[in-house]
Length: 259
Image (cartoon, rainbow, N blue to C red):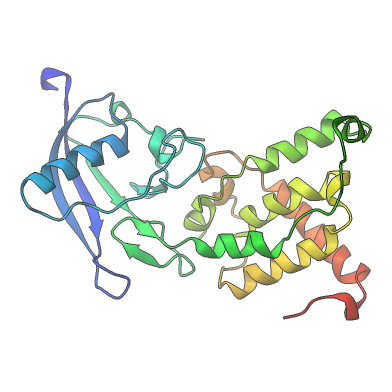
């Protein structure tokens, strides 16, 4: 490693449009070990633009591992090989000098490629919208504080709420299942008293929206949990399945909004 830089071969997926045929394009880059993958792509794009070439299209927003917008498959792993790390927090010091790095978009039929490393994850938005809102009126702060919630229940809800909806679980699953994402969104409300009024209608509508969106089924390989940058537990899937069975039994058929 000369001058404290890494000499890397980048093989990046390029695809002009959803209908175009994609391919890997190779780049030789000298990068700082302190740079993140996104900073490396920024430098690459600056060079490509200075040479009059088309830059690599990729997404990012917070660059703090919070939003999940940056999701890229790095050497076969959604967000890269480090556990509980989003792409934007994956630094080049975790690679070796002379290494070849493959960068490609999340692969799933429900996540069509828009361009290069950018995919359309709007079906996640549709699922969340299907879940609706809670109708519980907390009133003033004292009223809200009068609702007793145990620490165990609060911790369970907050752990589920850490899901950033990045889609790594879908990209990691051999079936392109969205069960981990949906179960996290179901669980964060189902365990809290504020979420109970609509709990059964919520899980019914979210599961229906998931199925209609074309995501695959879950076969319990746990790949989703292993690749999740927030470490969302597959126990949420079991909870969602219980909630769904209860919903099918509890909600009168005439009250179920079947689309």
